[in-house]
Image (cartoon, rainbow, N blue to C red):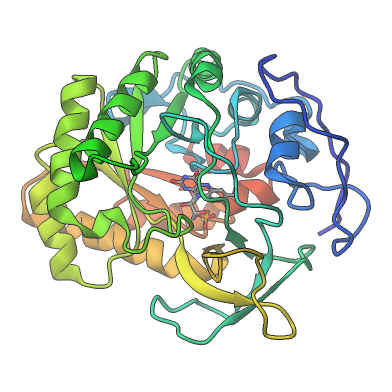
Length: 385
Ligand SMILES: Cc1cc2nc3c(=O)[nH]c(=O)nc-3n(C[C@H](O)[C@H](O)[C@H](O)COP(=O)(O)O)c2cc1C
């Protein structure tokens, strides 16, 4: 893939932080980038200047036919879009919607400002075929991103302060046209004191802040492997049921989707669904698969404590997202439930979208695929029309 220019074409919300002039990463090809999120630059730089590449250019025509795909109370042109992550603020979500991605997820927000892990965050991960969920051997990760189809995602879920993201998210919601949806992703933050009660209260408070922006569907991230907090929240079924109940109390009738990691144990997934399906409206799976990433000398590929293991996304994890979709669909049928399933993981072209739909997904989302190809939303619309 040719690396093409930093578009920086779209105006931001006016509340974007100011960052110093970019320092291109010497390890990556110089020149310009086709990706909407420029992996050669810091998170802060991307937030201030993105989106990059074709996504910053003119959008695609709005479909003439009325939207005909039902999803969580919405009618969409196509039940396809960009998962939480690459779209850092309203400049990104608006660009994505205009480029034919009919669902745009606003990157996960928190109840207070939270810094990103230091640069680099996104490396090429060299894995042949599929990445196994229990892989013990390390994987080579480096800056050779030109032909990458599997990448690392090590950010630590940064967030601006609600004073900044709330008005910006409101703009993002308003920019979703007829047949489109802004999906608002959020997560709770562990508090210094107060234990589980404070953690639960933070989830509910953050959800309330999100609901105040006018967002019509919320997604709660329970599955970030980059936080250094040990076990993922989605594997603690009792805690999730309590937290989801508190969040639903806070947001009323607004649909709530839970973002899950890959569950190796199907009985655990079944128990999770049984405990939460009566509370929430859908599940999105998967986030990423964790792996130990090393450089050519065998040292950690990503600098800093707690980053030896990072989330891997893209081509190598598609099998896991598809398998989770199939299993969730089976549990839904066997339990007589009607929750929505959002299939995520390794969707790089329209045929992958079709595979997820065949597996039982009501909607499909991609992160890596959209970073690589700003035309993917339009391709899926063409398939679906
Ligand atoms: C750059 C980047 C940032 C991400 N940040 C988040 C995030 O903030 N919240 C979240 O729930 N998932 C996040 N993810 C995970 C994606 O939503 C998605 O679940 C994962 O990348 C698998 O999809 P893919 O194979 O299409 O990339 C991020 C992914 C990428 C690539």
